[in-house]
Image (cartoon, rainbow, N blue to C red):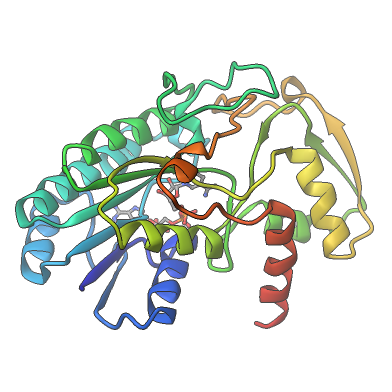
Length: 284
Ligand SMILES: NC(=O)c1ccc[n+]([C@@H]2O[C@H](COP(=O)([O-])OP(=O)(O)OC[C@H]3O[C@@H](n4cnc5c(N)ncnc54)[C@H](OP(=O)(O)O)[C@@H]3O)[C@@H](O)[C@H]2O)c1
């Protein structure tokens, strides 16, 4: 089986390649912007028709949530048109597409304690969320699609909330973090395992996948400082006191019942993910 992974210089793409290799797969095409620019239709078509993968893990995206508010055109070109080109050409050759989406397709207005299932109405509140949702619509035009919504991603190969917290702890001993946005962190090592599990089946459809358990950003920060032995005080603040360009959902807790229904193993707890991420960082 031949695999193609987009966004291999990012967090998730990097770990999908590692997961595939650890399972003994050797025919893996590792693509980033220099190899195939998703905004160029001819380039996408030519590369896919030349290489004829059986499975495309589509991890590349415009992921800067706040910058997207000022760069809507570029975000749309990458997240919507790039996915459209890939979806069309993979359909033509009968390849599977695994499109990574986001909890930001939901508006987050459900009260905390309730979760979003895969069929719940979507209503993104940001440009990033809108473009990722339109990307979902494009990916679904390939009958062999998996649309996998994840959240709060961290991996060894790229920037993320954990790295930002650790960097800040070098120069400060106190930090304000929002306490009224709820969701689940996701370790790319765990997500990659599930994505390859999905790709090995024909159980196409929409899934939610992140580490088990729900938390808020301030609790996530406290856990990070505890696990990494940093003496940092976390002050809980409200979203309204931490203005950002993009409006984020307050409650984007995702239900993972879709994984149970289809017989897939859920990811481990987010706390265990932080512990294992620390070990991975120490081994570098
Ligand atoms: N990060 C999160 O918290 C989060 C949450 C929910 C869902 N997701 C989704 O999960 C997936 C993986 O996220 P991630 O954190 O691994 O992303 P990431 O680290 O930001 O990596 C994205 C990669 O896509 C590449 N890319 C950007 N524009 C491109 C283009 N025109 N053509 C080809 N490649 C391009 C980037 O290259 P450059 O760096 O050179 O631009 C980068 O290597 C994405 O689909 C994202 O939307 C992420």
